Length: 277
Image: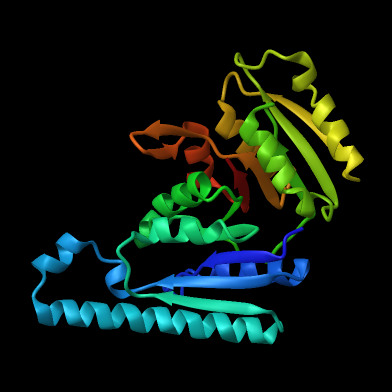
């Protein structure tokens, strides 16, 4: 069951898609919704604060906190209209980076909701997404910046390759899969695909059926266009309302960075993506 959701609250009012989506999700699932907004010194790296004149730094910090408090007001107003149980948090001072704070907070929720990066607006959430995906032990839903609708469960496409991450994502998403009208296992076949039984989704399909989820299976060749394009093309063709997939990464010193397919999906996604690692 999903009863506790954490939202990374965007301070830019034009980036409100994740807020509306998280509220609709909390409403559909009858879940508690917490939000966290970062402002002030919590956002600025220490070296930058040392280089700025005191008067300029004061103005920047004041503006940042004002925008964050306005975002919380919008959050509370939207939640009140929907009569939700909510918990806004504002973090202005911390020795840790916002991604580390958010990742640690997310461990105590069923899932977290984060807005997709938007380079055109200078909004880069990739580090936050990486931290939540690889550091929280909980699933993450990334909401496209073009998203207009709230949660829809018409058709959920689950990307399946038999891996640990894919298994984790499918099972973490069970509360949503049980409510979906159609659940589809999508298998992108390429030179790395070897197990014939896994290719056809037999075992995972039977597992989901025991949970009351009936699935369709679609196998598509990814040899020519690549896995990312195969997934996105199919999602567009079948008018899916959500993608469920494993989040893959590569170790870099003590951190993880997004793998190629994961990064490709997150940069060009057109529907919300539910990810687990």
